[in-house]
Image: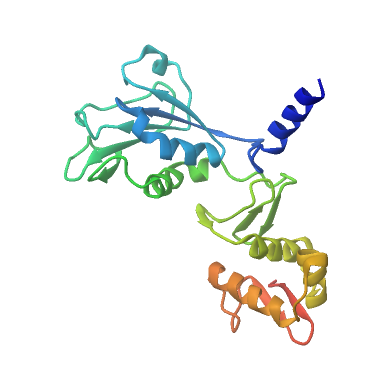
Length: 238
């Protein structure tokens, strides 16, 4: 029995952080070869999308299925036939370069499939991003202007754009947001971000803040997000 309990403990401890999603959106993928879409499906599920996969767009289940977006892979089949879901939803069609789609349809030309998931994700989130705004009452999200810091998924977004930060940069931004406009001293950052693992000088904080600013596209001379308080530390820009 002790061995079984230790195995279960290992299983639980190996679960990925940020895998639990309180809110999701549904994407229906229709492709004759869905196995090649695995990288895209993985990325969608990582971003809290529910994904349903069908081989044939004439499947009768699709007539009653409700989704935020239908993604049709027509890179190896005729793109001429229009697809209109019974429930209101956007449709994004993947087609070979140079192929025309019916008027009013959204398409994403690609020379080869599978394409890079990032290109599809960008177009997909452009279509449905505004339809499902971030829940402003979500306790796991911190906001500042157009930035959203998701504590659960350890992700920072600006609109539909994802900003890739290191864990240290993420924690620096979190500490600033949690101050709610108050000034954070360099000592505050040392204690709240690095804790007992910190062995450097205060300039170490400045180096990481500079990197964070660059990724946010923030200019220290005319800051939009992070202001320097000379001789003390940093605060959010009003």
